[in-house]
Length: 271
Image (tube, rainbow, N blue to C red; front, side, top):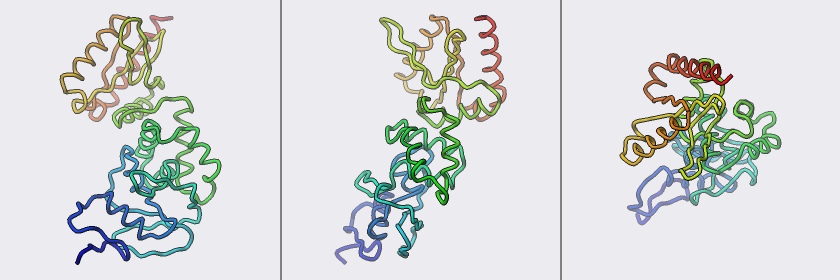
């Protein structure tokens, strides 16, 4: 009674708060040598956008067959030490392997958001993901084809998006026929703070697209900072369109139509 049994051979101290991380670490330990938290559980531990599942998943090498209550076990002949990292004190599949694993079982928009956030958080780069695919993304590696498609669509040099709403904005623009904007476009003005735009059509068009959500931009500091940036943009001769979360969800086609119309008008003026 001095310890709480979580799995065979794995115990917790009584009174220790239960958490997703505790359950993941316990399952990994019970999985035996070479096991790692994987798939959606690994994506959640890495903090990737769209990773919200409470289900615990681990990968085990070879043909071992541990039986763990409440844990999804993936047996993998391809799980090697090179696939494993330690994050937050827990043995977990490396970001590149995690992205490939989840891409085979989640919608493509979720897989795209996870990849973008992994790059944005500095856990990996498109180059490292391509390198991983070239070595370990062959036949039998689920999700590798989808990750290749996502990488090809985004290009090697595109900056990562910084929010799920930016991901939605890009998907919406593409879906309804807008030309691809430049992500995270930077404008430097001598003597003034650097302006970073969510998306832009650079000069000579000079059309700025800012993704705006009341959830993230409602506090007074963000409100003042955004308005100062937008005022400076207009003073520099830019046209600004705000892509709100409401418009992206409730009237996406009309919103993209406004973007296309503004782009075409500014292109004609610049010609």
